Image 1 (cartoon, helix red, strand yellow):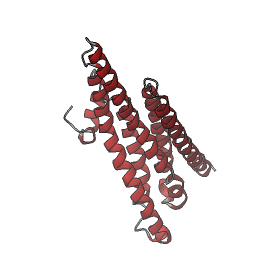
Image 2 (cartoon, rainbow, N blue to C red):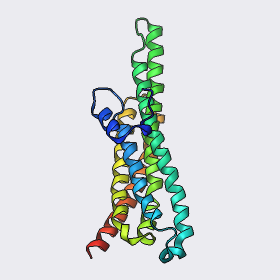
Image 3 (cartoon, helix red, strand yellow):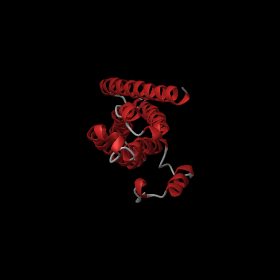
Image 4 (spheres, rainbow, N blue to C red):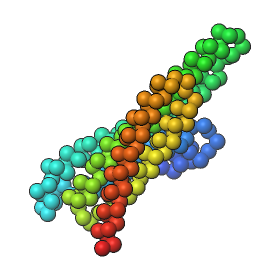
Length: 212
């Protein structure tokens, strides 16, 4: 697929996702959801900087926005990387397997492709964990008229991370290298827990403030 996922119109991307092509799939969609989370909380910062009411926290907000922008760009890139990685796995499985040598080469190629494929959603979970660190500060110090948008970002961020977790695990289940699997799973679980904790705290604090 020659088009970059991030360059497709929303309707076109959704149509691709809904179609019978193998990619984009859930991994790419999860990365897009993560980017939407970043954009949602970024908007709150955009409505905060330059406002007299928030002048005292403007430098702090700008620092958060720089990190949020980085997360968003990483997630958009991952939406494409997932498509590429999935294609590589398919190509590895399609390799010939008539002889013992071909079977061995095919098996090695599959394992290599699976490791790469597991790395993409793992990086998504990492980006979500990083993004989650900036949610509560924006909820507490950003423009309070957009508090619900931080809540939306929190839920989207957590959803993207949990979908990323699922896509890492589905690849790890097929990888033979137990040392690799154990190390990646430990890193994955730590980042997922961090993201979930931050997103849940942000969500419930916002809910409590809005509902009184």
